[in-house]
Image (cartoon, rainbow, N blue to C red; front, side, top):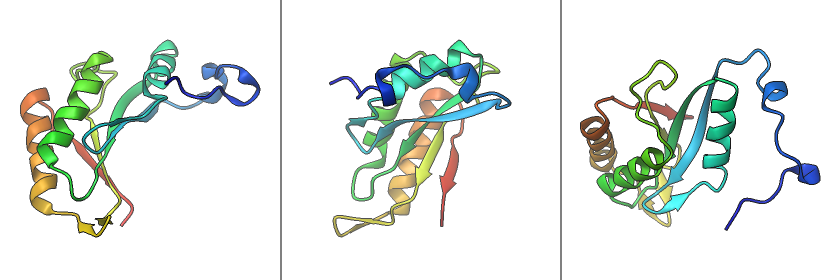
Length: 131
């Protein structure tokens, strides 16, 4: 299903939006199977104005870390991200939810995610958290 249109049904004016900005981190995936519906569009927009860009994965407590990593890698690779050039800093793991549906975040699952992404991409992810 395509993402809903922008307000007014028009596309972003990427040059106006990013004026003075140099970097963007775009949400790609959540959990083991969700893909952000705006990921491909926003990544293309960031590329169109030569922004330094990366993607992030929103980690889901109670799901397998390696499966989440594989999902993230499939989606980002399909959009041409390799994290091997100057315009692609390391991927980001977003850790915000400590409990989901009664299941607690497990350090071992986070470590599986980080290890898999590092092993496959050759780049160690950055971690983002609010807590």
